[in-house]
Length: 217
Ligand SMILES: [Ca+2]
Ligand SMILES: [Ca+2]
Image 1 (spheres, helix red, strand yellow):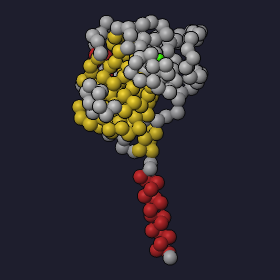
Image 2 (image 1 turned 120 degrees about the vertical axis):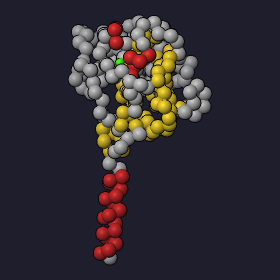
Image 3 (image 1 turned 90 degrees about the vertical axis):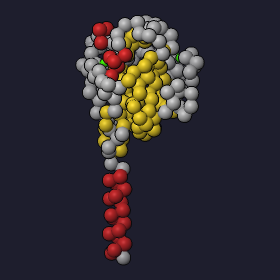
Image 4 (image 1 turned 120 degrees about the horizontal axis):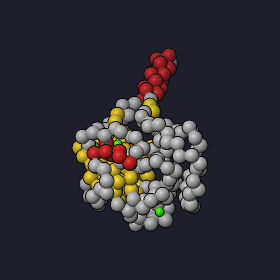
């Protein structure tokens, strides 16, 4: 009987160990002071958590919190940039400044990262542009092993509630850009490619990207 109890205790301890979770650590740029919040017309906007209040951390199994993107990560885009370089999206610089951003033309556009091989993705964080109080439209983040995103596509975020992007309809909320970007749970999806869509913002038709980080194993 005693042996059975010990065995049960060991099994329970092993389960706790296996389920140990750690928070993804995002390095944040300083908040941008934009003065009085703008009124943003949207029927799909999440409530503003308020200044200095961040979203709950993304918790992942220990070992799945490694940053997978580096300054050498290959970046491709749906169309040629208006200003900036593709590399700006993975250079680690999150300064909310026009000289540090990749700007794609207006309309539905995407930025795609190649992780080099299939990885288990635990989180993706996207910083568009927090230069003023704004909301990006039709933000969709997808993962796949197919470079063309035709097959085996997993959508981990989609706030295009009215399918104006014609990519897919989603149930997530629009959000105001802030210094904490938008951390998204990767749900431990196996994928080589990460594609981030947007369709302009409440401030301007173009699509700005400051940084995209991918975490996992
Ligand atoms: Ca950058
Ligand atoms: Ca939409």
